[in-house]
Length: 336
Image (cartoon, rainbow, N blue to C red; front, top):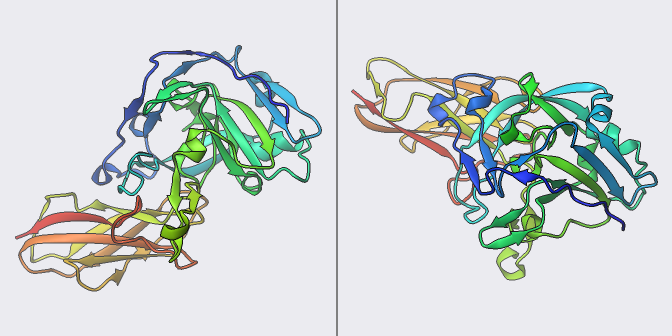
């Protein structure tokens, strides 16, 4: 399988970069401001102009090609509003994270681009390569490479060049990036420069060493089987009340928050102080965006009070209590 060369851009800075997004109690807006969105650059920040940028498509296809930025702009422009969530540290994959935002991407459909390359029937995966390179956790990395199953391309994956109606900021992948709505952010490769149609999963540390979870079954520990961190698992956060808020015991507790999952959430339940789960009102799913839930809870006894929310999908997948990146979110308040 022939592959084209990787663009070697200048990285400035040439180091791990992270910007922590809003805490759950700050996520008041349905659409997250770009300045408040999660930023995580494993290897540094490539500096590429639109004029220097290109996207090569190769691998098991009949018509490999290379696109300029002008070529990319020639495709139909489509927009997708979706949850964009960090999967958490690959060194601590079971540690819960609420590093999430809800933004609108715009760009060209990946399906339209790949269709012109005429993938061969044996193509099962799409490898995505960014312009970033360097060292991460003591491992030398030639390029940031991820993959996704080719059937995911047929949905709403984009080669995006806008975020919330403006050109991508450098830290978000300027001039163009992959966006896979419904998948964790690690799969949406920034500074996208090459895509390869392949018969097998991509080699490299970000697909083989990191971002793989143990299979959750009775034989997982014995077999050592893992699955890629692709689809976003059901999750929810409580926006209000905020942590450590003081609430009157004479009034109902007004609880609301956001819930999301790849494919949407069908139910959210809330409980107080470890009691019974109560169903919250949940707005219908709208594409890949998060969904708002609300619950007006009768007064509870005075003192320290813990609120928790739990999201469930239509297939019955439910947030775990602990031990997973999508573990149940809890908020402690004071009732007086």
